[in-house]
Amino acid sequence: MTAAETLADIRARIEKAAKIADRKPVVTLIAVSKTFGADEIRPLLEAGQRVFGENRVQEAAAKWPALRDAFPGVELHLVGQLQSNKAAEAVALFDVIHSLDRASLVAALQKAMEASGRRVPCFVQVNIGDEPQKGGVAIDDLPALLAEARGAKIPLAGLMCVPPADKEPAPYFALLAKLAARHGLSALSMGMSSDFETAVQLGATHVRVGSALFGTRETH
Image 1 (cartoon, rainbow, N blue to C red):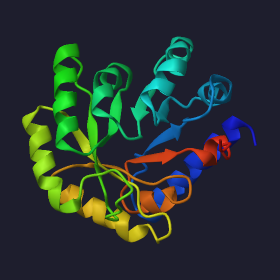
Image 2 (image 1 turned 120 degrees about the horizontal axis):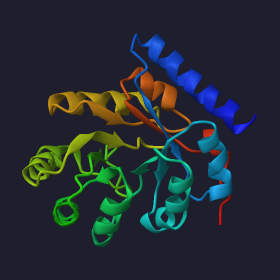
Image 3 (image 1 turned 120 degrees about the vertical axis):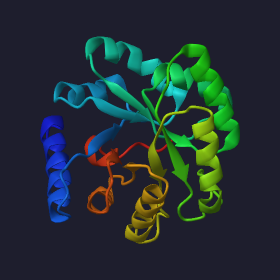
């Protein structure tokens, strides 16, 4: 399939999943373009996709300024872990950050946002499966982190999660939706190439789709 056909297929699947759950399909499709170069991204831009996700600040800084000049209206989301020392670069480059997960990052982002005058909406990443190797705030520590972020005047978009890879994702998506509702947050960043339809049925407002759009990444 061409990039346009692949994009249309993914969007149709999102719409169908929303319909099954009796939801209006107000779901933002984030095309995760990490590790892919400008030549591979351009066909999706030409097909009308404008929301993209990157994992690393440096990689995004290398390829997106030129693409943004060529294709106005691009919205760039940071979907990978963010080191505190990269906060200023991230605030300058990205429109939304999905990986706020600790107090030290709240402080770094607050400083960067105040210095730049940009208030970048942030999703708080929750370690929904309590996995030590993954980023994200522990569920028990979520209320304190949200209070800290609100106190720092960081705009909170919602909650984000990456469920355990080897388990059925639905219970984890349902739990994230429950946590968001409990804390008065409306947006849910959840669901990737293998499970975005399940995520949409359970309330996702943002899905992060990479390989289903771009094909399998080469491993180095």
